[in-house]
Length: 243
Image 1 (tube, helix red, strand yellow):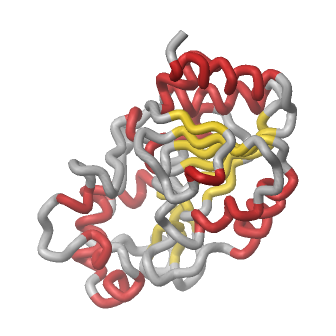
Image 2 (image 1 turned 180 degrees about the vertical axis):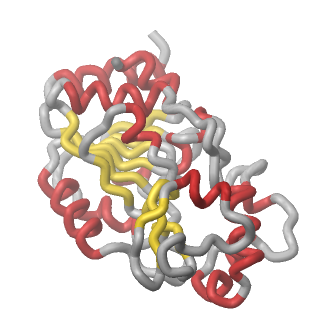
Image 3 (image 1 turned 135 degrees about the vertical axis):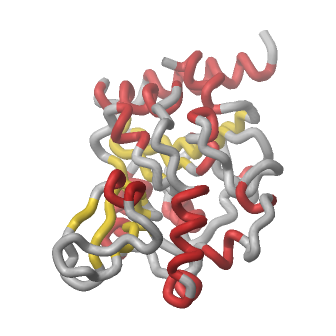
């Protein structure tokens, strides 16, 4: 049996023996659904725009150049055809089985919910929710896609902002606190598809108190030395064998 197979077997045993698992995921969870990873070689950060994506997706830029912001946002952040992949479905199944208590995600695509997951904590918000900045009326994704230029509220004419955490913006306190509680109290913490380089989100895993910290990522992360099990493989390959 290869080293990888042994590790996947170990993960299967850990999952089968626990009913208190939390999954913490990043962009790598959704790449197999065709949503590019920001920091990969072919990701958004390496595509040429008038401004770098980090600048465009900042609060300052959104305020100063809303038209340019929404042009980029609609072009590069919305993937309406994306469907849940093996990992999304496996996590939903684990929750249904009573094993997984929560998914904590840095993704904004809503695919965990689409796969059937009920307890999803979205650290960076969701493209599926959009609110008028003046009257707070909700607008769905279709409304944003069909709007010309800067989306405005059908009710009061105010600017409609995606419920997505931009650079320079703080994370939602309630979401953070709930995530901390789940991580602190779980028996097994599975981290997948993230380089653990984006703070404050990556700092949340420091609250884990157990001895079953599992890292599934194609490349190494700054937290590898803390992990009890490291699987350097694609999430889809791992979860297709686990469930």
